Length: 210
Image: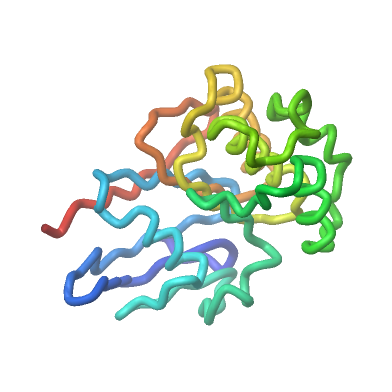
């Protein structure tokens, strides 16, 4: 494995769930300007690995490094990370514009753009004024992904980002990934779906322990 100071690095990770081992002896590196695709069957630990790398799950063994420093918890990386998982973090009582404005205010990002422009980019502007609770799963996913455009984060962690989105939106997401790594960003995503980018994709394969 390459050694480097910038970026994300996992060393000899072992994560347990109760008495069961989810994965072990897992090491890989995600330097700037790269896309890493986590692959594996349901139950193989993809979501758990993302949460571990984000500092939300404590490994039983091994360490996670961010820019050469041991990641001690979510607070040590939160300003440089956008994590979009199955729980999209949207308030169901607010509409899309209100959600994004609230998130942008919390992050105090230097990359705060017009949220309407962010919604247009992910094909979500036409339902931006509707409360989240009235939207479909795919529409909510597009709004969650608009967070990528309003937060100034180097590291993107995406859990099944292509779920329930149409072909045009899928291609938009692929373009966002390309643009991010072109500016030395890092993308780490877990998905069952194949996707296409102009950038080389590295793979981390997880296998069920049962």
